Image (cartoon, rainbow, N blue to C red; front, top):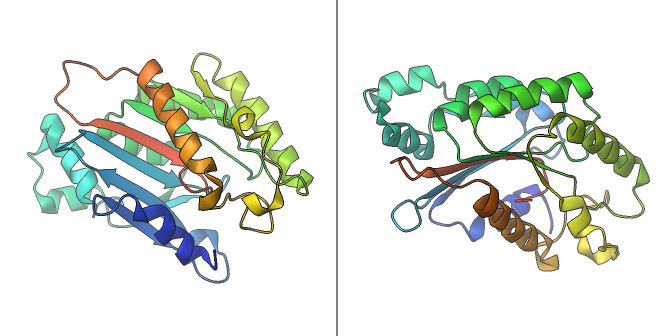
Length: 248
C-alpha cells in the first residue's frame, strides 16, 4: 500500500455506496489535521448504522459531526426530527475537536448506540483515572460497552507493544463490568513481516485477512452480548471507536 490515501480508499471500497469516509492526512503527520472517521448506513436492508471514530492517544478528536446524513438519519429515527437542517447543523457544528469524553457525550450518546466499542491501541498509556472516567462516560452512552484489546504488533517493535500492553491492563481494570474483545489473543499467532504494510508493524495489509477476521469476530460478539432492544424503532446503531488500524 503506497500511502495513507490509498489506505483510506481500500478500507472504504467494500462499504460503497453506503459508507462515508471523513478522512484526511497530510504527508507530514499532524494530529490536529488528520481525520479518519468512517460512517456506514444501510438501513433499508439490514437496519444497521456503524460509526468508526479515530483518535490519537490523549489528543483531541476531530471530525465533521454535523454534515453526515448518517448522523441526521439516526437522530430523526429517534423522534428528534423536530430539528430542521439548520438547527441540526447549529447543534452539531461542521468540524470541531474534543476529548474522548466530550465526543462520546455530545455526538455518540444522542445516537443511542446498541454497542459502543473502545480501544486505545498503540498510543501513549493514558492512565488509570483516564480509563475510569472513560468507562463512566461510555456506560452513560450505551447499555453495552466493549473494550477491544490491542492487536498483535510486528515482533520487531517491542517499544510500542509494551505501551499497548500497559494500556490494556489499565483498561481491563476499569472495564471489569463490561465485555472484553480479545483482539490481542486473536492475532498473537501473526508474526510474518509481510502481514503488515507499515514499518512500525501496526497496520495489517488487506491481503492478510486480519481485519476481516477481527470484524467478523466483533460482530459475533456484539450479536451475543449486545441484543438490540425489540421495542426500539431506531436503527441498530453501533458506534465503534478505534485507531489507525483500519476497521479493527
